[in-house]
Amino acid sequence: MAETNRFNSTDGLCAVLAMAIGGSAIMFRQLAIVPRATVGICAAANAPGFCGPREVILKMQYFHAFGWIALALGLLAFTLGHRLLAALAIGIGVAAVVNYNGTYGVLGAAFGLFTWISLKTGRYQLFR
Image (cartoon, helix red, strand yellow):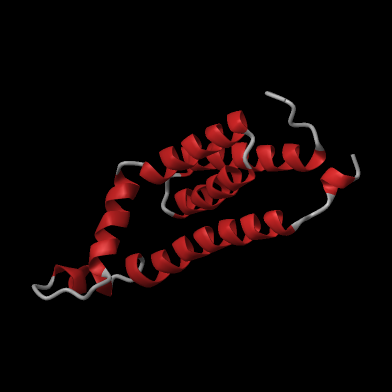
């Protein structure tokens, strides 16, 4: 049981992945969505390149896509017991909270975190 509690390279890569997704969402929101000037800039006829991804992010926010994706990934991680899916659920759950889809995003991140902790402590024995 002591072997399962060690933090290995897979855990490190998954933690970096979750932080990269969440951090990227925070940075993009602060730089491209929050400033009021970007509304006018993106409404111009020759809008800069960041306006396309900005529009996609805002549509995904409106339809709660971040929250639903995080919840789906969290449930998949929970049922299949995969660390990578758990890390994706945590990262996209943070992105969901940043983009005001916290209802489902927090649930997805919680399922991902619960799965990750269960795998590390050896308590995940659902299908084995």
